[in-house]
Image (cartoon, rainbow, N blue to C red):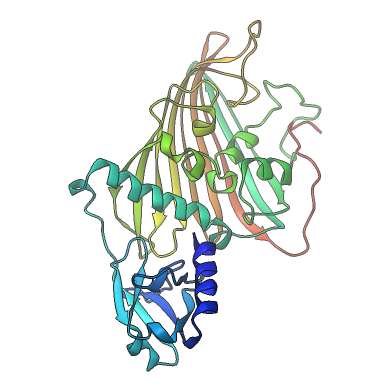
Length: 367
């Protein structure tokens, strides 16, 4: 859409010689923060542009249209219109837009859904600007606490070094898998521990829950129409206004839930209004069974030793251009025993220089 507006602007100006260029910046009237990707254009024409990630814009005005108005429109803000002649008197204009809270409950369900879809699309499109670009190392700690039949408890914790060749500059599930690798610090682990029951970690599943990096689930514009969306609240997060959007996939799919056998998938996503940065994602999933090797994998007809009666929830939090923590709470049965398991990955440090480049993933804790 933005590309199209730039093209239309250029085409129009070839046919109508430009009189002057209007330059400026669009900001939030309350916080003075820039408003990215504001739609800007001459009323009743195809001439327009959009503000950049810093809220800045530049628009050429043909001589024949100097008597028109310029409109400014951004999701989450009230539209504004100003005469071209007024902006001509300024070398650089600061356009202040007032934040607007959508009265979601009083609009048609279809309209409500479209508004929330647009918020999610903008959050997805702005990931490369709102999160750290690669290459990057994340220094993290992995922990796993497991209780079997309320009696046997096991705990493990060790360092993890993650290398992401492209970071969030190209969010996609395939890119995340191809270019995210890690190795494990095994100082507290047993030697030669390569069995699935004791040596395998849940790090892959935790990384898959970073929906911002994988551009999946409600952050995949291609499948947004599969979800039922509702606005839960409009809180202030770290001093900034935000949306909390509830989502539910009525018929869970692998693309939507990331779980091959899910029969329930729902959650919430928190997005800042000023720049569409994702702050938090939570989800709840139920499935009759899961493959031990990963919830996204099918189970063969003759397979044994898989999880049954699976019920889990997850939380992913973000700040400072990166994920802070990924937590997975999961209950299931395995070989007739009830298992309660909590896995988490805490990102403690980010390195963008002096990187350790990793070429593979280390799946087991054994030396």
